[in-house]
Length: 348
Image (cartoon, rainbow, N blue to C red; front, side):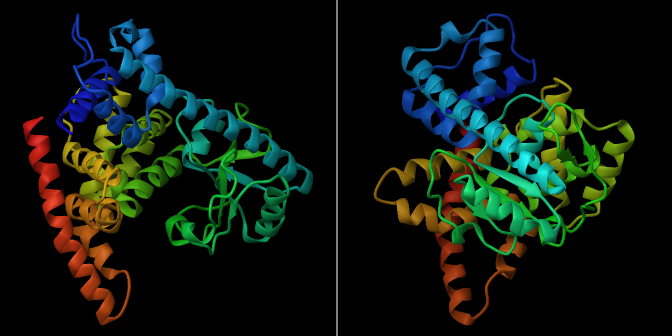
């Protein structure tokens, strides 16, 4: 775990331009590299930056093999995403539908640095959902409708990315106005983007509020950094005022600060090291007999590390007495793992 954290520290320094002359990747086992790459999902940008810095040759053979394999998988998903977006854009254009790319899909449409994608998030008006859903299924894609949970639609086709359709009346998207979009020529015709401030807010809140397990993942930090780069000073100030008034302001502000440091090529202390350490630990447990325990308590572990607002949101979910007892048991089991994350981060 500590070796994986040392890799993380090196990669963050590399991404922020903070490596000293003669710096080299830290010594680490192939297992540590596998843990790091599995959680951080940053093989493509890491490979590019190591190549630019002339450091690819400094990687041990096993680490290079792990990086190349992960980068190949990420490249395949990016290429798949481009093809799917182009096909869906054609369908939307023929039907006269408005489609807005969100998060990682927006990064791809805008022509930014390719980052790993596991699905395609698209914002549409409610009347467009049936048309796009039918088109997606006809093209062989798994489609998640706005009213469905991720567990409702199993990933049947491993050769494509799941298409997740969203409408602005969903809780995660209620702050976004469908009329406030603009088209970018870099992506497929007919695919629009949110205004920069809305895009930045959506990227920040998606992670910090709804997915605290992803706090500090390097792939997501790079996505935040790219979103910050698209914003004017006034737009950044508006987002900052908004996050400071939010119940999850601590996580939102920490995520924004980490992304801003990467965007400005400025080094800063890694405030998400305990979360990363806990993530590596859970990933290691999933490879053994404790896989069910790791899966069962993961949400509680990350809520404990994210702070009071994330924990309160976790406790608000669910209902009856049996559920509350089960949640209490998971929190009790999660506490030592969260503490281990803090301990590992201090010693790395």
